[in-house]
Image (cartoon, rainbow, N blue to C red; front, side, top):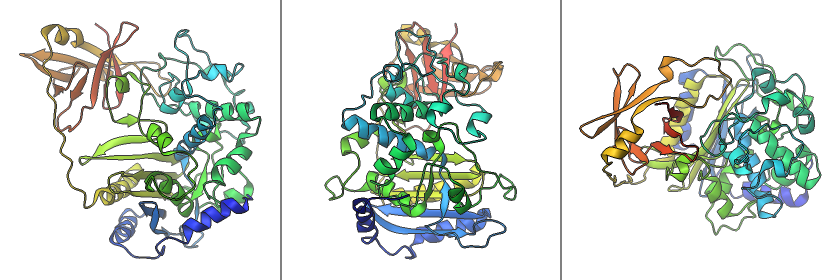
Length: 469
């Protein structure tokens, strides 16, 4: 990959202003300890605070047969974190006036396969980014396609599967297909090949000189080997059908520039690829019923925001054929991290994530959220009481199970959500007519709302339900 002199200067001006990547700080020792405790073959990481590098490095070796030491320069697949870069690409085009978040994807891609039976609810770019388009996810063959395809070629594979299953703009349901449409839209409005455009307009301008989206034999040979959950079975390179959803390969040091974008002070003298206003839009979901009802947490434009120990954190995870990755940042502390491991072990991923999330909020004062209590009327209680069944499935599923069902009931104005047998119930406290606290919540986490199609929907624990009686 060849970058312009300007892009390289931007990269090196950042790199030269950092603390030594070998500096041993307490959190680095914790990462090292977690690496030893899990036994994962390799981990690479980078830590940033207020736009400046704190530390970067790696532990372990390239593969069971290659004892080369992993460092911050080692190449890994980062999976779905690619979507955050796709969102940045879209926002760049929005700022240039070439795309509009609320416009229908079909208005740009008139001949692309997308069967939408909801004629009055077009699928917008924002819905594709927020996973509220109503599309289900890809199948295994599409995740691991035998050869790399252009986006035009990719949309010729299983066109019948590009079907909207639930009303667009209603419910969050993760689908990797959406990023393919967005990449193709950028191709269409610019008259370019997306891979070429992405390298020059996104990676080069972000100073990510060792990262790539396009596959090559050389790139594959440079990767740290990814392993299955047993830590010994190597997983071959997956050619994702749509690279904009999960095809990126990156080094930890390059990922520092993504973290800088989100953690640098707004007045920092740095040529940001998108504006602070675009970043703020990325951080906040707006298209779902839940977000329109006032739920402040959730999945924005390829940035998830959630509450961790009383503090709001932002970020995205990545899962790719033998690799698990995560980046996250706190706007309160100005800290951010990225790490990647070379094993399909979500339990290991969670252990690294907890250690690093604790670092993000270390030293911050506890945030005190004042709970707002709302009294539902008898009519409101009756309107939401009944049996709920899951209304969205990420993957194609033929049969529903009784365990999919929930009951909302109330006794003496105590509202509860229960399993079908009513043996396990959890109290719900109303925050408003549509928002509810679960036990231990500091902010509302459940939404129950009547949509314009006449149905009542519930989002609870990131699962979507519909009232059936």
